[in-house]
Amino acid sequence: MRVLLALVLLAGCGAGLQPTNVPSGMCAGLPGEPAITARLYFGRTIKGGGKVDDAAWQRFLAEAVTPRFPSGFSVFDGYGQWQQRSTGRIIQEASTVIEVAAPRTAEVVAKLEEIRGAYRARFQQESVGLVVGESCMSF
Image 1 (cartoon, rainbow, N blue to C red):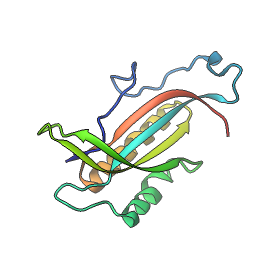
Image 2: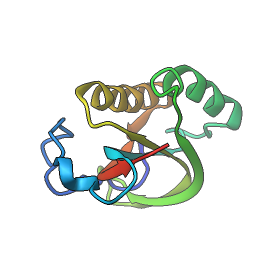
Image 3: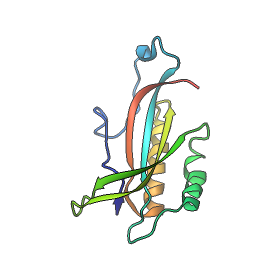
């Protein structure tokens, strides 16, 4: 199955993304509150041939992403490269990246994992990449 980019976990997240208490001074002198910024990497090629076309992608956003993050997220089109686990082959494909800024809570972590699982199941993906960083959020 397809993987977009290698799954990257930041230091301290090796056992999975866990809710933690962010130091209260993290955003001192900056606008906003402590948060996480999560990037989800979605490959647009389907195993066995075919692509996740724009109509299918829009349905996925409407059904799986928007209900979980109705306050907002950003979507970027891209092109990625990753190494297939089973064969070691280098694969290149069109991709889409979603970026979400949200409080670091158990509920947000669960929503990110639900989105990843929904995409893997719907489009026969081996993985959906996730990169998470600590940040300050203000809207």
